[in-house]
Each structure stands twice: as C-alpha cells, then as structure tokens.
Image (cartoon, rainbow, N blue to C red):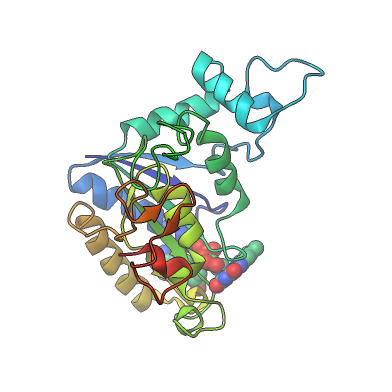
Length: 258
Ligand code: FAD
C-alpha cells in the first residue's frame, strides 16, 4: 500500500522527529511504500494567496475559492500544490503528524490543507443544488482512502478526558478529523495521541513506539470512526441538520458519530 505522511515539526531531533523516522521504517519494513511531506524541511509556503495561481493578474481582485477553482481546472496551480495533490491521489492512506499547538495543528500544516485542498479537488465536488450539497462527508475525491492523526500534547490525558479542562480530545480534534479528513471522503481512524510529552524518558518512549507500531501494523484493519455520511438519509435537506429521530438527546460534535 502507499502511505503519505504529512509531517509538521521544525526540529528533526524532536520527539515528533523520532516518531516520524520510526513510522517510516515500520511501514517500509511491512512492505508499504512511504512518501513524507516534511513541511518545515520543504520550506512549505503556508499562506494561501494570489500567487497560488500561475495566471495571477496584477490588480485583479483575488477570490480565494474561485481563483483556486480556475487554477485547478486549467492546470495552472502553483507547482508545489499540484505535487502534493498528486501524492494524495497516489496514497492509499494518509497520516498527519504534528504537535498540538494552541489546540490545533501548527500553522504550516493548516496552510498545507488550505492550499492543497483546492476547489474541485477536495471541495465543490458533485451535484450542488437545493436537494444535494455535493459529494462530501463520506464521499468525495478521498473516498476509499484511510487517514489517521498522530498527535503529541503537552497536556495530560486527564486534561483531555470527557470532563477535562481542555475539553475531550475527540472534540478538540473534531474539526480536523471530521472537517479536514472526513469532508473530502477519507475513512478516519481513531487518532494516536501521546500526552504529557515533557515526561517522556527512554522507558516511556519505548512503550509509545510499541503502541504506535501496533497502530501502523493495523492501519488496514482498524475500524474507522463511524461519522455519519451526509448523503445516506441521516440529515434533513436542505438544512443538513441531523434528523430529529436520530440521537434525539444529543447535540454537538458527538451527535455526528453513529
Ligand atoms: P520534544 O520536546 O522534542 O520531546 C518531548 C520529550 O520527549 C522530551 O522529554 C524528550 O527528551 C523526549 N524525547 C524526544 N525524543 C526522544 C527519543 N528519541 N527517545 C526518548 N525520548 C525522547 N500542548 C497542549 O497540550 N495543548 C496546546 O494547545 C499546546 N499548545 C502549544 C503551543 C505552542 C506554540 C507550543 C510550542 C507548545 C504547545 N503545547 C501544547 C505543547 C506541545 O504540544 C508539546 O510541546 C509537543 O507536543 C511536544 O512534542 P515535541 O516533538 O516538540 O517533543
């Protein structure tokens, strides 16, 4: 299988750097082909702007969505964007690996998502009408591919527990797992989260490595998070609110998980 690892940490000798190297070796030893997009090493341009289209016209009003649509359709995207899209097409599984920074991904990785997920590539696909809101949330260009997060946090596991002060980790990661990954069609596996990173010594590092290795071995076996698909009848159209008879007492993120 082909695995794309999109990795965002500025220091190769970090915990994230060690785990990235470990993951690549483990996957390759199991016979998979791995490509790594090491965003800091690539000096990835994080901000989406008018220069993302090769047809930028001086003085023309920049429209982030429509310019992205045109550049994608005409094959006039900046080369770095097109190369990452090609890696996504190639991949059977995509891993995003990053330290949790301010409750989300580092800006460089957010910028990868914003620029690589072009209109027509990751969104704006399929019929858009009063009766249908396109192919997304379970359908779309990434359908049939798997995705997983590897995330490190300074906070303790309890800080991210159901009543923890930071909010449950599944809620913190929901915009990435449901928004960034499920939206364009990925089957999203439960995340691999390493908490309390300041307390990692050799013994704990070895435990973490073993647990991560097992998750990588199970990449094609692990059941995805059962997010509710948009176009299978669970949502009223066109409001796209969950049908009142489904999980009637639930609101918020967890209502969108079967
Ligand atoms: P490192 O600092 O590189 O390493 C952590 C520990 O692992 C060290 O003790 C190191 O000795 C050990 N280690 C590293 N490599 C090895 C190895 N090969 N073998 C054995 N031990 C090793 N945390 C939150 O919980 N929520 C937040 O919102 C949040 N926001 C942040 C925002 C910013 C801007 C920053 C800088 C940090 C934030 N943090 C937050 C903390 C952050 O998530 C952690 O610092 C990060 O996850 C640690 O990962 P690292 O790869 O940088 O670890």
